[in-house]
Length: 613
Image (cartoon, rainbow, N blue to C red; front, side, top):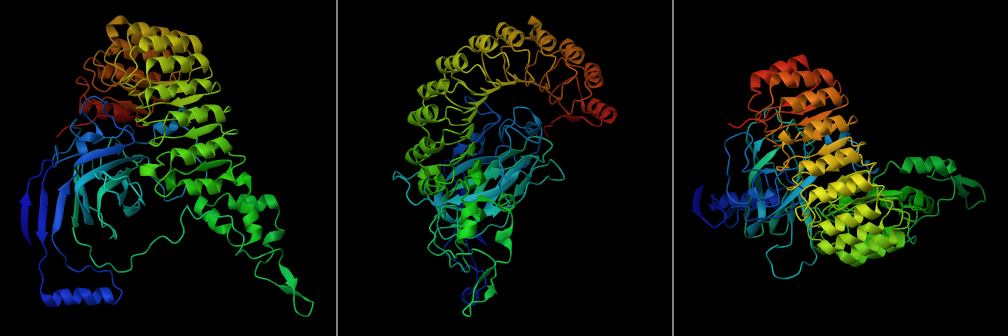
């Protein structure tokens, strides 16, 4: 196959000219006409790397650098074919099942489809819209996290507003665990679609992996001209098909109906409607939302059951983010009079769900809400948060993770939610005035995530307010806060002695020489999770104090310290029998041999030691 290649700014585009005789082309045409899945050879094949990272749900890196950030996924490979832990790759925030076991983890939603595995995502824009023929992902460390690849009909670089945006799944699979952490080029067989695309979305699930997965680059291959596709199937019923019309429903009122001669005749309904109402409700509670909506259209009996508000006390629409619209949310509104928990995370992509549709639903059904998940909802604006504050007086949990387009002023409305117990503000633009107002008027907060909130100017003041107002605080995430000092940490651990989880990863202003980490250990006897990632000052005396004072410790991350020895780690492992995760990656005094010895002595502990090839 002949190749022609040129180098654009973001990488290269490879032009492949298909070979073949006229007879082979005719054979391909006959295959299409006979119902086989085949594509006629057309035009040239374009190969291109991602031009731009458009959106993502989380990343390990900071907001003002390139190390371990999703932005590394644009352009040609930085690392491949090398394997290992490299800062030039794209890394998501979490891996494994450790986070799910923490007290700060939210409760799972019922009715989540078995086929929905996605936990994180990244969206990539490419230069040229093409009909995809292949997608290749360069995975350079602990591969196997990708569970879905989607293509979008909208050109993200177009100046026109998106209309009739469609997403199609090119490939999907279950979470896997590769046999080796070595680099690989992942190229699954993809489905052909009937529109050109230059916008791809990768969704991942890292729950089975032993360490952070690292991605290096993505190639989109495709042709410019539309191929002849066979057996292309559009979805028959989707989440938008929620009409409550009863026009076509049969009246199944019982297992018998009068015959022409006046005698009772058996119907196909059997004795199903004779079952207790509660039992039918229990059976239907195991259906996914689309199945419940389909079943509601079969007969009046099942319509009554499927529209019972008790079936909608909790509702997760995140699995249907690509298809959820104002109309479908409006159809659900009449069924959600008892709604308590609502998950709209990832919805509203490119105008599918608008602030108008969202606000209308919340105004009508927010009064009973206690939990609202809105991670990565980019349609949100300040009026939306104002509506939430006014319409949801009972709200206890609010997740605005990665809602990075919300104006800082919008967060002031959260302070009106005085019953809040869990608040996630990871990667948002909240500023100091707003967070202090929230802590002043929301003293019931138990779980607070301020990870990567780079606009907060003085975390010592925030820590002092937490110690004063939120003494029942159970978990606090201050990942990559840049200005917390030993003074603020001392106030925090003195005032919030109920803390079980504390993430101080990549907080460079904390120094072990001040004694702050030893005071932390003495003040928090209930501590179960402690992340001190990349703090190079952690030393043996800090580890020994944790061993003496924190017997319930389960997760400890001290990646990057040069002052901790294997001997002190052994003391910790002996003193903390519940410990299940210990990350000593890049700890220069703890070599691979020491890790192997500790692992053999404490086989129930996952001791992590990443490598760079």
